[in-house]
Each structure stands twice: as C-alpha cells, then as structure tokens.
Image (tube, rainbow over all chains, first blue to last red; front, side, top):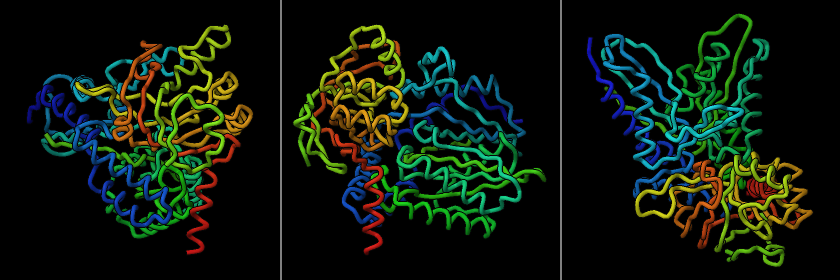
Length: 280
Length: 186
C-alpha cells in the first residue's frame, strides 16, 4: 500500500484547474494554426487569427483563455495499491475551490438546478469520475468544460438495425443542430456502445484524445476521417461565420453493449478544449 | 473597419451589413440569463431597469474575476439563444443592440426588424483578447448574482462583427453560403 496525503491531492487539483484554464493543449493550438492556412475568406482567416492570438495572450499573461472557466470535470484513476489519507472527494473539491479562487477563474456553479439557482461562489462541487486501476499511482485529469458547448451535446439510443449509417446521421445532426453556438472550430467526441449513462462518458473520453490519436480498429478510424471531412464540408466555419474549419478533430470510443441496443453520444467541445493531468 | 460610438441610434447602424467589422467604443451593459429573467419581472411590474434601455447595447457576458491590476478578467460573449425568450421584449422597450454569439430565433429576428435593432457577434472563446478593450467596469445591479450581475462597461475599440442587420439579414446563414460558393468556384 502506498499512502497519498489528501493535501497533496488538493494542491495538484488546484494547480491543474489554473494551468488548464490558462494554457491550451499544443495539439489543439497546432490544429488552429493549420486551419488558418485552409481558409479562403478574410473573415474566417481573421477569426482564427484572433482565436490563436487569444491563446497566446492567455498563456503569456496567465489569464483564462475563456471567461467560462467551466464546470470542473475530474477523472481519477486510482491505483488499487493506493491508500488516500483523508477523503478523496473532499480533497478534490477543496482543490477546485482554491484553484478557482487563486487563479481568478469564474465561479459558474449553482446549487439547485431549477428553483433557487444560487451560485455556490467557489465553483464546487466538481463532477468526479473514479476508476480503479492496477498499481500504486493516482492519475488526476482536470477538464474544465464550458456550457456553451456542453449544451450542444446529445445522446440517442439507436437500434442495432440503424447500423453505422444511423451513427453517421446522428453525428451530422448534432453538429448541424449546434451550428455556430458551441464556438467552432469544435472538437467532437463520439461514444458508441455501453448503456445510457456510460455512453456519454465514452464520448467525453473520446473528446479528450489527442488530435493525432485514432481508434485502433481501421473500420472506426475510417468513420472518424469521413465524419471529420463531412463536418468540415458543411461550411459553418470559425465562429460560425462561414469557412473551412468547423471541427479540429473527431474521435470515436467504443464499448460492448446489449443485444437490443446501440447507444450513441456525441460530445462537442469548443476550440478551448482544455485538459491537464498529473500522476501522483 | 467601421468605428461606432454608443449610444447606437438608428442613423448609426442602418447601413451596416452582415459580416461588416465594427470597432465599438462607449458604454455597454452586461446581462445574461439570470439578469434577463429579473428584467422581465421588473417590466411586468412597471419598475425601471438598472439602466435606460433607449438606444442601449447589452453584452451577453459574465466575466471572469479581475486579477490585481486588471479592470476585468476574461470577458467573451456567451451563447445568445438562451436570451431569445427575453430579447424581443427588451427590443420593444427601446434596446438597440445586442452583442453575443450564435444563432437567434425567428421571434428575435422579427423584433430586430420591427424595432430597427442590431445583433453583433463577438468571437466566442476569445475572452482574454476582448477584455483588453474594456477600460472601466462597475457592477450596477444584482450584485448577488456574482458573474451574472449587471455591469456597466466602458469599451474602446471592441472588435465585433455584424451578425444580424436591422433588416434581419443573418450572417449565420449568409456566411456559410458565401463560403460554399467561393469553394465551389475555386
């Protein structure tokens, strides 16, 4: 058994909240730069130029890339030989509260979703996903997610007979419904399989993959490529003003499912596709 | 680039077309979901809003907190369609301009046409750059709402794009068609 102190976890989460909001992942930054070379209209070129400049300014001046510094989504891979001294959930939420305070990040969480909607003032509670994995390490990933794009995500319980065409049609529908709203160029994560609650998580995990990583099965990889091309042929473009760069990447994650079903979830992230991880 | 100064009268905005780049200076007011909901209650009761709506400009935004030495934190636009239920009423009561991002519904477009209003887009997710054009920031109402409080902003050369002109022409429809046309001819 390896003991990890809760203070260490709090400190790590605090730092990850701040860093992820200031510093855009390199692969996304490079994809934006690549998009600039593919645009033909002045407005689309200028818009991508501003998005790139914004990422530069945020990194240099240490300020949030976007004012919507998100709901803090935390993925914890807990090694089965790890013992956390103290309470893991409390340690994470304490780190979120500290990070959002010390990093001058926006507090965007309300307590009751319908009636009261009173801001909790420290951006807690975070959404936390735990996984038990072999080993004596604790991997923490912080992925702040803004709701401009979160509101554009959808789930559909397809039938097995809908096949891959049903999946493709649903992906295109979700992207078309979203249009300019989720701050394109977007990052698309598609989950297929599992069940109702797990397919959304699959889509989120797909969304966080590096731009260059693809599904190991060449059949799904071909669908990833085809869908990315089709989305970029829609013409929605940067900020939805029209252009070539509607999506920077599209990833599929799959899981075993039931004989009667084929759940599909499409997660959309804005161009501020933030995530940072640390291994303790 | 077209330079405009608030208050935005009809005369100043009537010739703007979708896709025009505008550099806006003057006074604008932040308001988003929770503040709009309160405005509706105030209008229903005949109470005055926290600022005069006549020829006013509302910015759909909730900023990040200011770090020491800053006027304001990152302050880009939020998605506008969530305010679609409220915007026609505000336009009918004198609001001239809205700044946000994303599509508006037919009711909003009709209200823009009826009242000679205008809808500008700021670039979503570019909050760090946009905040450099904000020179002064004061909370003037609903302080309890935190980031959703109403703020009076003084802006200089805030970069905007005309999204829906006063005659209801919509960049989110036109821009896509224009790009696809250019691509086809290339």
